[in-house]
Amino acid sequence: MDSILSEVVKRLDRDSELVLTDTISEAVGKIRVFSYGSNMNEEEFKKEMKRHGYELGLKRAKKRTLSGYRRSLDNESGSHGIAFSIHRYESGHVEGICHDIPIEALGAFLSKEGLFSWRPNYKLIKVKVEQEPKGILSLVGLKRTTIRELTDNDKEKALKYVQATILGAKRWKVNDSYMKRLKKQLSSDKSR
Image (cartoon, rainbow, N blue to C red; front, side, top):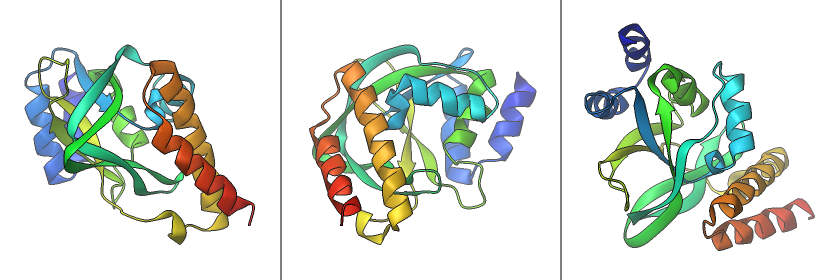
């Protein structure tokens, strides 16, 4: 187990490394994560985890709320065109899910999220989520972009990403009204 963790930690940027090592010191065999985008869609999550070398579904998943943040479709993504991120917003809240990632699956999970690339898509943060007894990990985007900046091909990928997120949100009864507005926007952009 220690060799898995040391391999994972040395591939992260300094900020994510500090957050992860702090969280691992409290963990016993698994890490709790707050997910707010397409990771809520278990079918997509399983498919992507398998593609990154580890078969895993959503373990001990529960709908949860993160206060003091807002969700925004504004993080550059090679595979999705654009993806959700969260940003500090004092009066905001983000509904999503908390789930477990076994330590042995951590490298595949972080690779899937783009944390190992030479220019990472996300970094790890530690957040306090309502209904969770301890602080847990989440991801915040590092490559801000807008839908207007996307190519037609990336808009098509973004539409599929948002649709997958909506399916996951429905499963967990997460408010998807913002996602549906984005789907409508991306669909109308595509038809032009």
